[in-house]
Length: 472
Image (cartoon, rainbow, N blue to C red):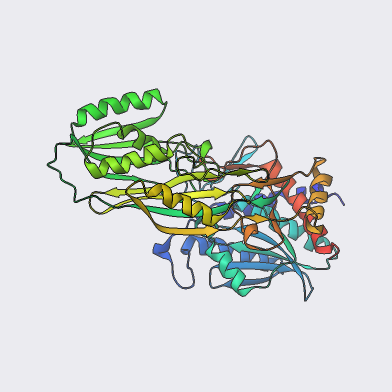
């Protein structure tokens, strides 16, 4: 069987179906949410699109209250394998070369938000099963493609799935990199709240007052833009801000309205699992402002951000730095910031910790560090690490499919990212970014190479065939 040739026969249809999916701006939108569409109308539209394609193939389909859907192929009444996909995307921030929801192919790359995370790989998996269906290949187990709707902001969809559906015997999420990621870091979301010393005194002797500081919208993204509104000798700060931007090769702007100055700094967005690949706009803006004499609460807020997170992606200042040989170092992404005098001063963190780390230890150390500041933890949520042993039939099947289709060594990897695989036993992350290729998820000008999309589809078809027929 030449799997790649079978995929090539369906190339035009695959690209057309994917293009139509990518046109849907399926970001979470609670303003348009309803009981039947809990993530908003556009995500519901994307889910309906994939289920309609599945219906046309003759697959059994299910939509569970808008949280997730799945398409199942096969005649087995017992075991099934699962492919864990998601059709929601993060917002398309930044200046794109072409509109993010108008898919465009340039120099062999398909550009659009969701092209690699995760609509491209989702369509590759769908077409892999489509190949198996159309060739009528024998399968011992059913194949279920799951379409999640909330992967980018809490995974409530897959948590709901675990409550309702039976577990697969094996499965993979096409939502990371090849060859195979069998270990994923744990993830902790922490909201730190500042306890004000007193009501802000705008008549105090401090030359500057911080009226607002905001940055970030998603915990799993390095914030790209940060803004601050300041009162005081605004001319001095504006001049020094220009010099600061030049010295750090950053972009930004300042605007003055009477005695108030609004600063906006542009950083570089990146996935929260690799904060060192981005430029955290909030941290850099706070680092700049922390050198000035602000009102007491404003200074405390800015200093905490600068002292704790500037040039520290690994939690050293927080006292939680840790690494292991399986998944590498713990990382910290300060992701969402909000400050208003007398109202709220918060910093929300996204922490990815190694499989040998312990949530209770990390929580305790953060509390110990915060005890020396005005901040306390108001919210904390943990998701444990995930690790599948290398000596399983599932791992061997996935390795065999990858090696046969690429000729490359199917090395086992670890990741700081969290995929749906971490929420189900005996599941791993499997593609779709190939070794040596750039991962553009959550970045502007996100893309998937068309050739890689086709190669991944062939690998998935063979892998699904092997998994569905492997010995128990």
